Length: 283
Image (tube, rainbow, N blue to C red):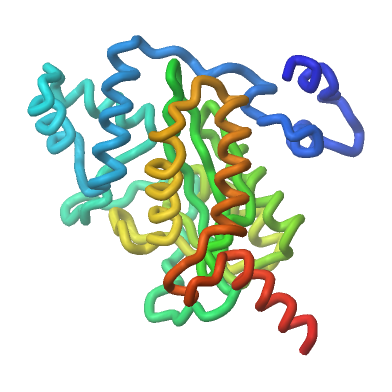
């Protein structure tokens, strides 16, 4: 890994750092810096919060505090709120009294999927990011997925929740697969900023954003996170970013190409996604 880092040329005229990392199969997060440490106790609590939230994404800080206390952990709500903020999670339960406050200067786009029949690949893409635990730290994983086929078009790891790794994953998906008709995300600042929406506008993609606190709007990507965590992360308990990257590469290859989906009559996401593309080309 150190050898690959040494091959990166930050001042390269034609390839930026993200493109060079992709060519070298080097996680961009490992090029920049390592995850910031938290105390062993906080990391243990974050592991529990992650597991509880994956099972029950409607849990807020009060419910999370109560469940942690039932497990014997003496924590107050303020501490739970701090850890949930670090992890980038919040309750997906409807917020009746709380109005959405977008990031300064960021536009919130309307939700375009209501009553829309999503019947073909590249009609709608969705994207999100999630907290991923390591034995001695944590990182964040983002993915871009085709809604209809469930095919994971691209993914990337970062040690921070900044918009850069979300933009990088989107650009990679566009380079590999062309542009969808609609892109759907939540209202997080990673997706409402000019960098992310600007890429979509440049490719003539319609922008759709979930309603605040609506767990079902982006349900396909939420299901993907549960699958990733239960079928890989929790079982493997990765120690380093490098190990995680190798493991996820194997997982997503299996998910796309080897895992049949009942909603597709036992076909894999790749069969649905590329099969439809082949039919379009033939036509």
